[in-house]
Amino acid sequence: MNAKILLMSAVAVGFVSCNKWDDSFHGLPDYSHYETGTYEVSVDSSSVKETKFEYVSWIEAPTKPYRQEITLTASIENTEGEVTILGDFDFGEAKSYETRKGMGSERHRYITVVDSLFICHVMLGEIVIDYEMPFQAALYNDDNTAGQMAYIGFGNVVDKGYTLTSMSPEEADGIVYQRQLLRHAITVDFGGKTYLATATVIVKKKVGFEGDEYLVSSRLLGQGITDVESDGHYASYRSWIEVEQVYNTGKKENMKYDLPLYAELKMKSISDMDFVGADLQKLNAGFDESKEHLIKLPKAEYVYAYYYEKYYVVNYNYGHTETVFYDVDVVYNDGYNTFTFPTLHYSNIQDEGSIERVGGGEDAHGKYGEYKFTQRVSAQLNDVQHSVEKSHSFVLTE
Image 1 (cartoon, rainbow, N blue to C red):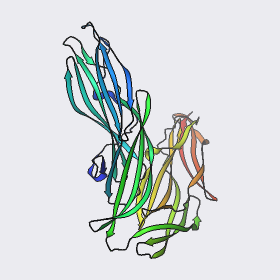
Image 2: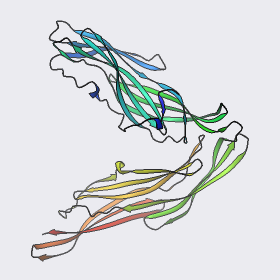
Image 3: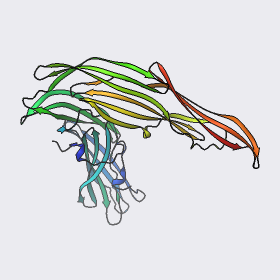
Image 4: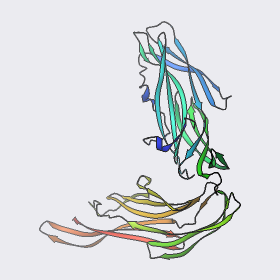
């Protein structure tokens, strides 16, 4: 297994976005007492393994009569490898994080060249792909003037997605492996231009031993939704697909997967809103992705259900309300084909909030008004409309 392709179980990570350059590894330069810059950037993309860069960094220090220069290098490395996974070939959405580490240094009279490594780790299901980008920085010190010289770093890493291509099964040491060819790519900026880095990974899964019967192909025969029932904010239904499965022995088998599913709207309590007036103003509304929750559950061989909790938040000048949208996606993935079950999802979301005066009076403290805030949220589900509503009463001094 290539060292740049790792199983997720062997890696402990903290999640951050892989989309910006953080210069803190070498400290922030102070150019107030000297001038420094770069020039003559050259690019060598002749190799399929990497893109190499070379440029000159210079410094003009008041303590020396002439300019000091050093040639620095950097590179973007493509990666390839092979890895055996434990679960299925459902890699989901890529997540990424960055690390940096020093690789040593070398002194050239007044200039010390520091070798460093910037790595963007991309997580896909069980595996982690490491994109390694070596680079150099330079530190100047003539005993009177000292500081960091200008250098070019990597930045703005963008995930370009991946593709999967089925490969023929492999037999090795009496074990049969199902295989997929995964191709992934990112782009990264260097010196004001954007460059591509690629990863090619053969992903293998053990499916049996030599002489066993195992799946070699599949095709979708049909799909549908039945038994839809709705009560105003909750719906239940059944979703099914039928798949023809072909085995290495020549056997063909039609498998029908029929699952009970649901969709629901549920509004959270609104009692914590702080009503200091009755002039209600809506600021904005939409789904808060930071609150979204997902649970993945196996339903049958090759079949997984993804249960979502999506929070629709309406923000007002007196606080906010939250309505949870519950729905589900179901996927069949046998390593050769991926089929999505037909499911019901909400659309055309509408929200309305209002305050009305419902009474009032006068007591020892003076006049007061009684008010009621009502929040309504509705959405379309297939050919029916679901809606939820909550109210909260409050009193204001008048």
